[in-house]
Length: 141
Image 1: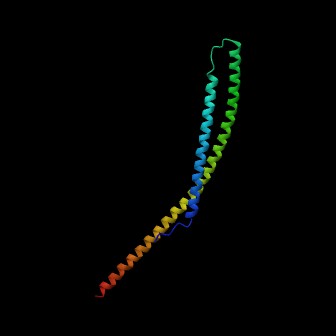
Image 2: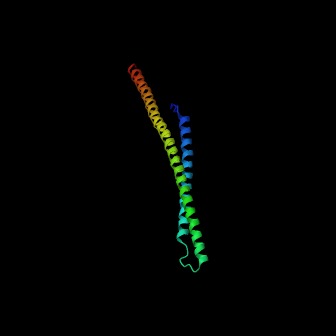
Image 3: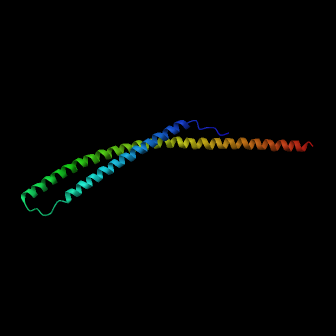
């Protein structure tokens, strides 16, 4: 008879925590990618300014656009740093959740090995007892 792992409920809880941490980490990494993509798009906008400037109005517009784009790049850099810090924290949370689950998984494996060995030992003892009875019954006839 296989006995249940006594910490099975806690292991399920640890797996649920790990699943939540995995989802949070994936979301944080997605947000980092989105911010990096926005930064690259802004950088391309800065690089794609018209090369021919024919009058003062165009020059003024290009200068204003470049200044605005530089300001946006600085803001996006700050967003990327913030989101990267969030992703780093999410990674740490995931790592801790994984360590907690892993320790319990190892205990569960040891429990399963021990219970299996006990069950096999009990079965072998029962078979040995049956064989011994047959020998003694067979010898008295």
